[in-house]
Image (cartoon, rainbow, N blue to C red; front, side, top):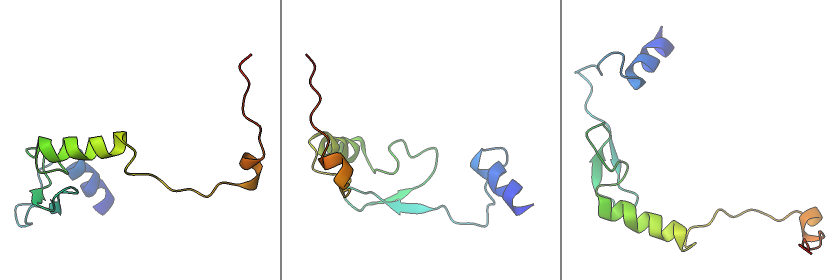
Amino acid sequence: ACVLQMFAVRSNLCPVPMNRPPRTVKCPQCGTPVIWSAESKWRPFCSERCKTIDLGAWASERYRVHTQESPETSEIPPHDDR
């Protein structure tokens, strides 16, 4: 029953219980508290500005997902398009 109720709340099939305070998260860019709801247009960001700054950081590769290169991939010669 709990799983079904959680699904219903997440999919907006039933309202969130009124006795629970709204969930807040910190804006990943500036740390401002943001209420996690459909009304928070830029969530998890506090504003379009913070969202754009974050997107720019990804686009300029300031954020990277680090992986370890496996020995097999380092031995593969570059592809020749001729």
